[in-house]
Length: 80
Figure 1: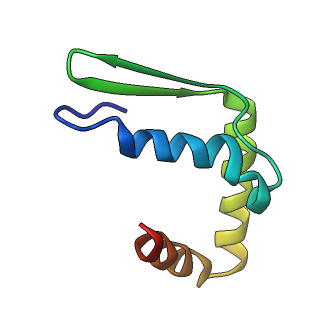
Figure 2: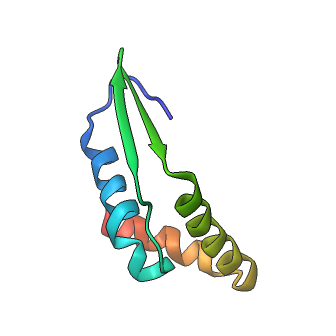
């Protein structure tokens, strides 16, 4: 992921959620995260096995509960 002319702060919050807070919801967290800032771009690298496990958890929730996605997006906007 890369975006120019952005502050690092929003990415840092996302990493805290992925590496800590998400475990309360998905039962796992991303074990390792590497963030690289180079030439105006921020690149994030997540450890693949735990990231895939979290992704699978949320995909299954979305498939089982058609309203889950809209509720989640609504909460993201509310708390951002």
